Image (cartoon, rainbow over all chains, first blue to last red; front, side):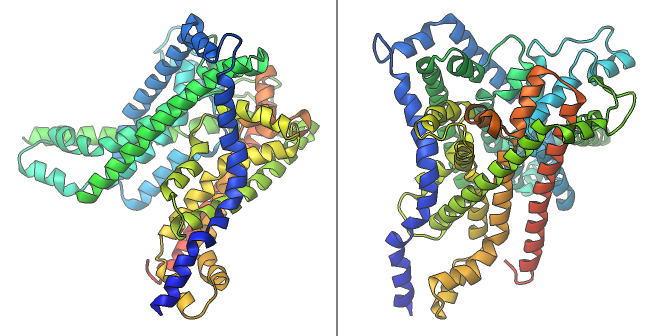
Length: 285
Length: 273
């Protein structure tokens, strides 16, 4: 009987490869090919293969855009972490059924088109929008805030859009933390503050890392929100779009895209390493 | 000592209250769009002073929106179908099959979801020209299918990891052919996840903008692209009505996937997992 099953099992080596064919027909021409094409095109130029990269790294305008993209992504990541951490903590320690509802609430906006969510923020943050009007009505403000053309509104909207990517990995990690560690710390005399800072926080760090990398990666490539709410300052995706579709400078657009691609891939590798490390340490604990 | 306890209780309660407020705040932007869509005014102002369904009537009568909705559904359903077939088969190969390089394969399947879409878009544009797909439905369908493979892939991987392959071996040792085993054991077990993978892929395609900007022509324009063009041109409550329609449709899709999953979980709970 063992032989019968073994035969079916071993036949799999060649017998299962056809399962990959449909995906190969999609992924190879419509994901791998365009990526390779961009990298290839980025090494073209009249003065040599590195011409585009010289432009990318020498042009002060492009450097400003890169720096601004990093700055915005870092700020958005920081704010989502600060907001997301206590939210994840509270939701993790709620009764199971209520926690499930909360997770659904956090994820609900994720399924709504980014165009629509950004549109909503255009309304909320307008000069005579509900935010300014209500702050004026309460008396916190004496004149309306300018939020739409200086990056503040864009960052707010991006934080709103990215919150699920931070909260979900945090909840997943926090669920694995054994409550007896906290009890042990309490018995050893730590008050709740030190229990959280010295015991809970280090154990939740992998979740915070995973969430932060996810938010940072996806912020680097943001296009819709910066276009509609970013005002005069430009982020990397918008610059790539401008070079490609308005100025038709495909080599430069490809070089910029390659830089973004390499950055994303590097961050994604770090993300995988952190996840693997978290998984193995969780297994030992 | 006792004071300290009270202090912590207050702190804990306030963090809890703030969390609940924040969770509700997640819904505020969506609510604002719904309220705006019911405005009776001819320009955008919040809150509206009078309410009516006039912008829904104008949205439904607008032939641009009509064709955009049909395009979005055509592209979404086709792309989701292709992605679901491809993603499900790879998931079966990765979790149950004996193939080399499973780890690399999973990463490759996930990669399209991580890469910024603008990069893929400028790479796909010349390819769609080269394959003379430019401006056809296939250009967007195939691009959306490739990018949404992760949704069915993750869902089906999860389902296959959720039960032991010994059930399949048991069927085969009782004489079932691999095809019979797949039809009567594997498919019923992963069915709900295949469905939710399809729904998530459909929801993704119906909301996607950046690839649509580069790969559609005026005749294959999708709903998010039309919304985007309108937002850059002239903002009226009609956009809010269209956005509400799109939002309602996507959320109903997600709800259906959740219900199917919940229902199937209960069905198998009796036997214990």
